[in-house]
Image (cartoon, rainbow, N blue to C red; front, side, top):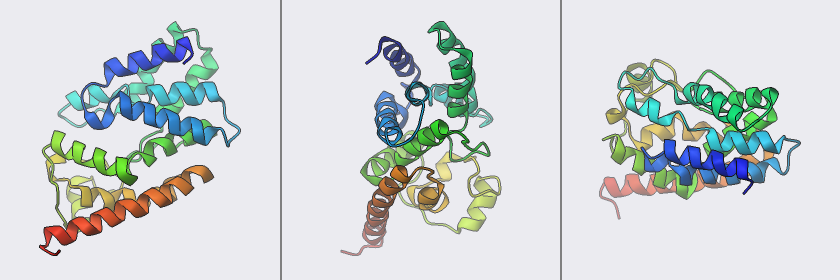
Length: 224
């Protein structure tokens, strides 16, 4: 790995020790997926690589804020400036990388506009479906004292715990479950993905994810 990128990876690893679902392994999977998708697009690889490595560096600040007001995408974009400046990235690329970080969230009003930002968004969202999506979902459940299984009226839940918006931020994480997350996020992932390569991966992964949830529901209900 290029020395600059190695330094970015090292910085990310120090910032991301708070959650198994958002650790350096997650970052590197997003990085590798982003590079794979970007190779089929007319994208600035410097921006894609740096943005992917730094996309979650604000996560610890969000995790420590019990008010729920901190957005790790916004914080990460702010943090990235001095990091990239110290590594002599030009101002235009710093701004572009910051934009990629700021717009990578699904539960946000900020949408990616450039191809580089769309690639990082797609790579990060692909981590929520498929086998890795299942593993990360239950890791998140354990960390946040959420629920392995809970079905509820989604319209009421959106009003009560997502601020009235299907893609709103979760207020009380302990009330959340993998099924609820599927109904408010994962089932919309394919439509949310921007790149052709990302959509192809998303469709296959989502099918596997849904098959698992259907099986889980049967077992919860005492079926064989």
